[in-house]
Amino acid sequence: MEVEYHDSAVSYFERMRQLESRSVRIVAHFDPISFLLTSDEYENWLRSMLEESIPTSLVDTSWEQTIRRVLAILVERKKVFARMRPDVTSLIGLRQIEQFLHHGLVGRLGLPPGVQLERKLAARREVAHIADFLKSNPLGIRIGIVSDNMPSETFQIFEEAEEASVAVSPFRLGELPNIRTGIATITTAPDAVNMYRAMIGRLWTDAAKGKEGAELLQNLLDRF
Image 1 (cartoon, one colour):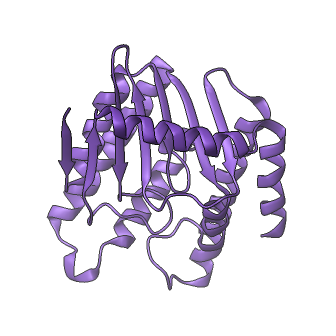
Image 2 (spheres, helix red, strand yellow; image 1 turned 90 degrees about the vertical axis):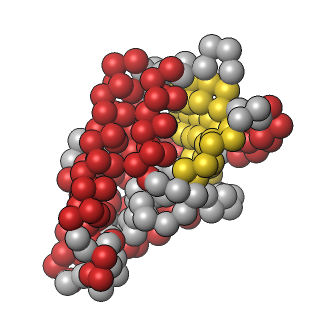
């Protein structure tokens, strides 16, 4: 049994890329949605959010390089995903989506009203993009909308041919993103993997799927 600790978002996302490239099945919860399921325009919005999230006192070339490296890894992850098409099960928290729509794609609070409106419209498009997935039910992608409380940290199970790993991370790529602070873990310990599988099974059982899930998201969009 092995446990990895990552205090760097760069090393963690690179390790995720490596594990995803070998996985035949991926089960994940990201707050609010998995980067692999975002639209093509999300990368540019994420760049803006990450730049906004860095405090003025820390803005220097090292953090600009970190942002570039993280984005490069994420783009490569998406390319590998599109090429290999592993089975993906994604759990999405309804409350997290509501917060996502409320704030919009922002890296910090207090942006000018015009910018806030633009970012909220961009968030709506991402939620509509997920709703389209739910309606079309593409082969190999399963999405469940969870109304219950979701864990505060993201998690992902990588199912390979002969073993499975579970990753738990404080890093987030949604509104008010965080790539600076926290320690992520990755382990192949059977107890940890089985516990997360059991939790995922409970959440998946009660999750709204397909057209039912799409209707939940559409109701949220109608409210905002």
